[in-house]
Image (cartoon, rainbow, N blue to C red):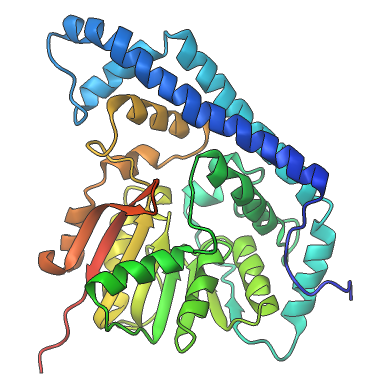
Length: 381
């Protein structure tokens, strides 16, 4: 026994200083330089581009977006932004490795001890025969070294440690300012309370739960509910299970493909996801939404939270900056997500138009998310 009973990643003063440098660099690039690119485009590039094209640019036009891309890639400012964005992500993962790698042996020993306890609160069920989608199995998403499925042995939690370590830096570096002490679960509960204040779920499922951070928030917010989390990456689920056990939370984690889950019909009152849609393939996203409809009980609610990068929500320059993620940050489905017909997918799955929703919603003073989902009607008496 290593004497450590939690799954917390601990940072020294040196670790914190290095992380703060990376966050400051990312803020300078993602916020400051990106703003400079928008200004340069509006003031200097756009007038000539519109004159050459013979029409006003439209945020909804793919052709115009491609034209803006072709114009920006010739600009030294854009090229500097591109190089520094790539470099800042490299520095982020180097920094994560500097404080995670030395703690992996202790964290692994703790996870193994928790997994071996006969009195476990929740459960973990892995499927070694699962056909993990290629965009997760074969891609280092976000350029995380080894990707989400990286394993050295059959009880490895290292990918989960790296994922959580990266999360300490990435959101802050993008300027996201989630309210202190508030989780994704708090945000979803607030959204539900505004529209359905009497809703009390007894079975909750998070789809694409990753390392379980938000799954655990639902277990705390709804202590009377049975909480489940599914993901296709086994190392992330091992981390999630160990962390939940260490925190005294009863959660059942399962390895499944979100597009083809094995739960019976009408199994859950509330189904949620957090930043899952933009990681799904073109076929996987509508299939996941259809699965949520199948798994919802009558009167159940699905709420999905994701990045608001749809044309019409952001301008052409930001669309080009986001497209950069596809080629250089292994966000293979980023553009697919931006162009997905989410309202159409909801309707095709069965969600009635009058109880479904899809669009931008603010969280706090600065953050905005794309929120979509709906409520399944009660069965007629």
